[in-house]
Image (cartoon, rainbow, N blue to C red):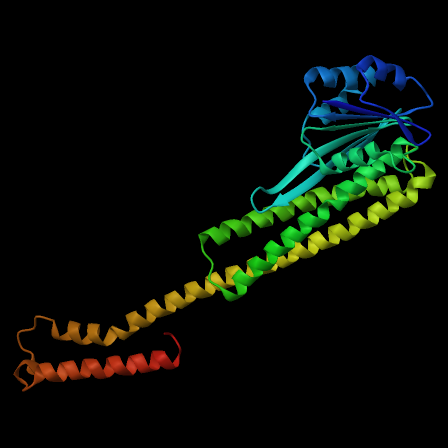
Length: 323
């Protein structure tokens, strides 16, 4: 599906034009064009990316092929960016949606396979046409990236809640196999999140420094603020990851301690049976001449010796807290 928005002097003057009308508008130097490709068909991709805007084949390939990491490429007439929006829920766990942007002097093209809250929110805001609208594609790009970063906040709150529950289970309750699977899942989610946040921060850092000619100087403070938000986000994610790894270490130590307790208990049981084994083995030998056989109450004496040494062994192990 193709959505298009035409701006003139900060006002929305056209929306969702036909392809031929969009081609004519794109050639008008006084207008700002935003084209949003929402899960487009192959024909729509070819008509817009190749036919209308004539983007580089490598940029188009990076756009239509899912990329695991954010990136930025500076071409002669436009800037190409790969960013990632994140979402998290207890049911669906960690999920990412790629948002690709082509940013030029008088146009911006966005591409995504799944619906994005940041894009939807900006479209709804522009549709109301309240106040002064964007006067440049770099402003639209900033609004999209800012909304995208804002959507990290509820996801981090969900992850923090689950992290607190994991810490509570590790410190106060016994864990099971299901808990171990959940712990490994959350650790993988944090690893993926860190792989996304840091490169995305590097992209915004490059834009905030003014290295690109497609970002006006008046907007650099806004991009610096966005960079600072991502820096704080990265610090939060790093702190959560460290807490999770600490909880994981505690879990491993508890598991090792429980295993040691089991080994100690089994060892104690074995040690208690040593007197029985020694006395029983000694008097179980088939010797023809054994003086104890003629001793009155020999059986009772052997049993008494066995019990005394068994009790003494049990008392010793108890003092050593082996059971």
